[in-house]
Length: 79
Image (cartoon, rainbow, N blue to C red; front, side):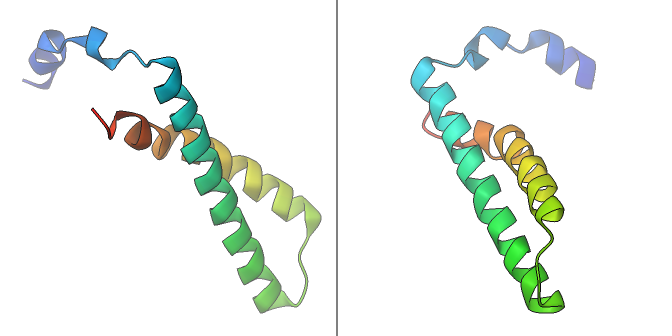
């Protein structure tokens, strides 16, 4: 049933225009930066210091996750 629904779906509707793509990148990146800043603040609060390696890894993972998770919501939210 799920495969039948996927076969009938019009995949051409999912193409992003340039403004939608930029909105996806911007929203995902900002979400990732905000999340990593919050996690760094939480780490500083709990441990009294912040490890630069932890900040770098957390920021990279948060930005990539934000682009792929929050980005499509921001890009397709106006359709």
